[in-house]
Length: 117
Image (tube, rainbow, N blue to C red):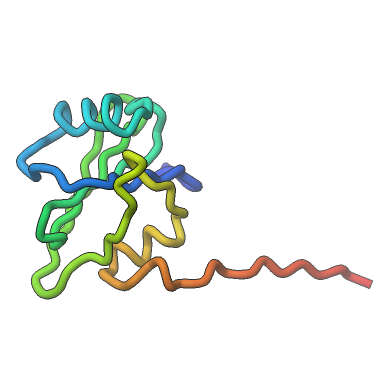
C-alpha cells in the first residue's frame, strides 16, 4: 500500500497562503477556493509568499495527510496565473516542483510503443 496515489490529479493553488494552516484550514481552502472535493484523493499544493515552503494536502483512505517541505536556500518555481484559483499539473511536474527546479520547463516524457514482430 502506497502513501501517495499512483496517478493523482494535482492542483497547485494560484495564490500564497498562511502556512500556519493545517488539515482543517487546508481542506476548507481546497473546497471553497480551489473548488475541489478535499476527500477526492487529489493532491492540493499550497505555498507561502516567499515561495520557500509548500504543503501538500490529500485524503488517504480514512484521514487527511499533509506533506511539507521547506527549502533552506532558494525558492520553489511557482509562476501561476491569478485568473484561476488553481492550475492542474502532472505528477511528473510535481516531482520537479518538490525538488526546487523549474518544473514548467521540464518536457513531459515521451511514451514509446513497440511491436514485437
